[in-house]
Length: 498
Ligand code: NAD
Image (cartoon, rainbow, N blue to C red; front, side, top):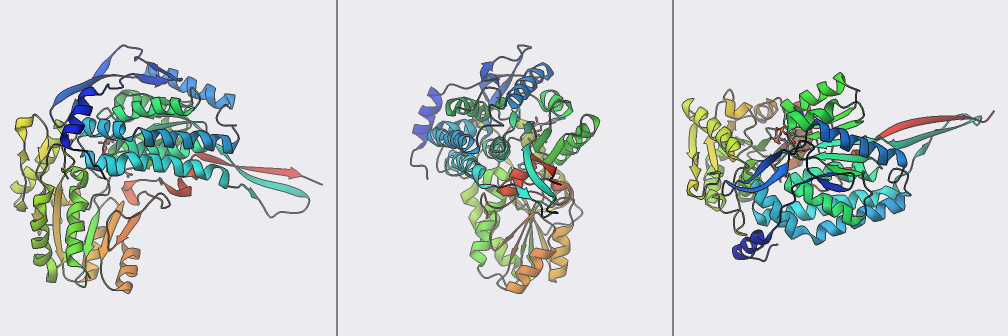
C-alpha cells in the first residue's frame, strides 16, 4: 500500500518531466508533421504536456521499422531463454519505476494514486513477468500420424502487431497486449489513447533500458481516426489487437476486411449484471462489493458492475447498506492517497455521463444518491457516486454502457427472471452472482452469458485466467496462456519419411 501523503505526490509531480515524443525504431522523435496535441490533467483542467500527434506518415515509419526488426530475427529468432531474460528485465525496470508510472497514470487520466500504486503499476510488471516466464515452457506438438511421416504442429510469431488501447487502465491494458505479443516474438506498435498517452511513452524508455532491440517496440501517440485507422488499414500489419468501445471495435474488424485480413482481436464494452439472490450469505460483503464494483476507477471500468439485480426480499436492506457506504466514495484529489474515487478522464466524458443522468431523471428514474458534478472550483471533472433504484429495463441507463459512477438497481422475484434480466443486454463481458447455495451458484454461473462470472465476489482473478467477452463485448481473450496463442500462427509441416 502507498505510505506517502498528498504533499509527497504533489512535490513529486512538480518535479516530473513528461515524455512527449513518439518512439520509433528505438528513438524518441517528433511527429513527421511536427503537430502535437494537449494532454490535460483531469483533476485540474490544466495542461500537462504537448504530445507528438502521429498520423499515417509516422505509421509508415513505425511499420517499416517493426517489419525490418521482425525479418532480421533480432527478436523473433532469439533463443527463448534470452527473450525471456530481456522481458524479465523489462518487468524489473517497470517495478523499479512504479512510482513514476503510477504518478503519470494518475495525472494523465484522473485515477487515485493509491489505486495506481496498489494495482496499475505492479499489475503491469506482473503481467510482463508472467508472459516472460511462459516463453521457454511452452512446447510445440508432434501429430500422431503414420510411421512414414513426421508431422509437426508448430507456432510462429505473426509478425507486426498493432495494439490500440483505451484510457481507463492505460498501463494494464497495454501490458495485456504487449506482454504476450512480445513474448511470442512479434514486433509491436502501440497506439495509446489520445486521452492518456504518457505512461505508454514512459514504457518505451523502460523497454529500451531493458534491452528490447530497436524497432521491436514502438509507441505512436495520436488520434484514433488518424494514427489508429492507418494502423488498422495497413497492408503490412499482421494483427490488430484492440481494447476499447464496441463501436470502434466493429470498425476495426471492417478495416481488417478492407485491407489484408489481419488478425483482429477485439476487447470491447460491457454492462455487467451483479445478481444478488435472497439466500446471499453475507449481505454486508455483498453491499461493500457492489459499491466498489461500480465506483472503483470512477466507474470507468469495462467490467464495472453497473447493473445490480437484487431479489425483492432483500432489496431494501441491501440498498440501505450500500447508501451507508457511498460517503466513502465521494470524489477527491487523485493525488491524495486517501481518495477512493478520482476525476473523470476529461470534460467530454464527464458531460457524457451527466447527460445519461439527466436523461434518466427526465424519464422518471428514481435517483437515490448523487447525480451531480462536484468540485468544479478545482477546474477538474468530478461526478458524485450515483444510484438509480428500481429502474425499468427499457431505459437507456440500463441498456447503454455509461462508463461512469452510475449504478442502476433492478428487482426480481424468481431466479429465472433475475437471470433473464441479467442476460438482457448486447454485452457479455462479466457477471456476478451472490448465493449461499452451491447448486444455485453453479447453475446460475452457467446460465449467465458472460466471459467471466464472479461467484460471491467481484473482479476476482489473476494472470492465469483468460479475460474477454461474449456477444458484443468482443471476440478475443487477454491474459493466460490462451492470450499467447492468439499472437501466433499455427503451422503444419508434413515430412515424408517413405
Ligand atoms: P474508444 O473505442 O473510444 O478508443 C479506444 C482506442 O481506439 C483509442 O486508442 C482510440 O484512439 C482508438 N480509436 C478510436 N477510433 C479509432 C478508429 N477509427 N480507428 C482506430 N483506432 C481508433 O474507447 P475508450 O473510450 O478509449 O475506452 C472505453 C471503452 O473501452 C469502453 O467501452 C470500455 O468498456 C472498453 N474497455 C474494454 C475492456 C475489455 O477488456 N473488454 C477493458 C477496458 C476498456
